[in-house]
Length: 106
Ligand code: FES
Image 1: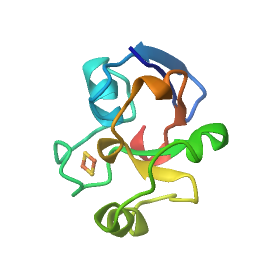
Image 2 (image 1 turned 90 degrees about the vertical axis):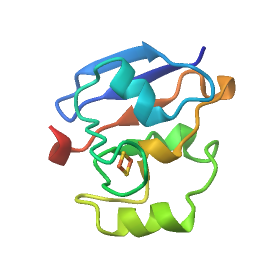
Image 3 (image 1 turned 45 degrees about the vertical axis):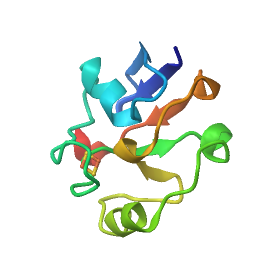
């Protein structure tokens, strides 16, 4: 079970136990983490699961596909660490992953 730490824009931390195979977005929703809205339910169509992957972890996550990059191009406050949580599948190797959440999703 990978443990994931979500850090809200105000630096409030939420460390949750996720399931390998579920998405980063679903781990947040299942644990009532504020700041991940997931309006489209995980279909890469809303960008309300936008998050910033900690620098240390960015290279360990598979690169974004075209549809995700398209959505991120219109996301508020997107930067080079931006990803959509619904497009990241968790694995045991991601135990300890740290992600930050944008102000726009508070
Ligand atoms: S939940 Fe809508 S894009 Fe991720």
